[in-house]
Length: 265
Ligand SMILES: NC(=O)c1ccc[n+]([C@@H]2O[C@H](COP(=O)([O-])OP(=O)(O)OC[C@H]3O[C@@H](n4cnc5c(N)ncnc54)[C@H](OP(=O)(O)O)[C@@H]3O)[C@@H](O)[C@H]2O)c1
Image (cartoon, rainbow, N blue to C red):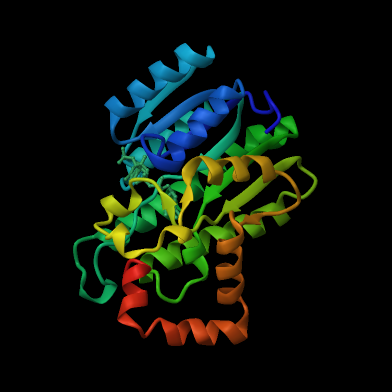
């Protein structure tokens, strides 16, 4: 990544995993930060560490993005941050329950965190970026966006992010604003623990480290490619899932309980 490309970045889901890693790599490149998540203490600890180590300004903005009023409060903050030139919609979580059996509100929470927050925060950030003629939005999706066995709500909300990003980039042609839909595969973070998934059941070679995923995302941002799948193995999996012929095989494989379990269903 070239240094000092971005003046100020806002990262949702910055208290752990990929969001924390974005914060570390951007701070190291001299970008000032606004960190968003529910766990305030974690954000404050990270902010203190990064501002001390890299001499950047780091603000924390605790918010629960499964609540519409909190999303609107953050959108207002974005509108007031005139120098924001990078928005990273990264906050997310995996489903714990089957859609047809669930009335806990998890589906609605997922729509708010993955979709509503991304849409409203992006719309709040764009006018200033377009006026300035530069800026970028990264929407963290998943290879699950292409998968027929990664959870009804999880896959479908992540698929929304891919088409939202692709179409938004078309709409923004010529404005200088870049959009990326990052589609990681299995990545070592707290995601699987939070979702109650058993990581042990999944072979080592299928995993990537969060720092590598984020490095690829930042390096490829703005390079005429909207949907970015990090890692050769993940690209192969995504190819098989997107190709109509092999998708049929994937669907057939999804009948296997073992494979569904590996994919977290
Ligand atoms: N790890 C993987 O294998 C993988 C693969 C593909 C895609 N992804 C995607 O990558 C993104 C980051 O996940 P991760 O792997 O880094 O998982 P993680 O380590 O569990 O981090 C998730 C982050 O999202 C935040 N978050 C969750 N619910 C939130 C809410 N209601 N309001 C505000 N923040 C919320 C969490 O913060 P608080 O709990 O403090 O709120 C945390 O900072 C997610 O969108 C996920 O779907 C992950």
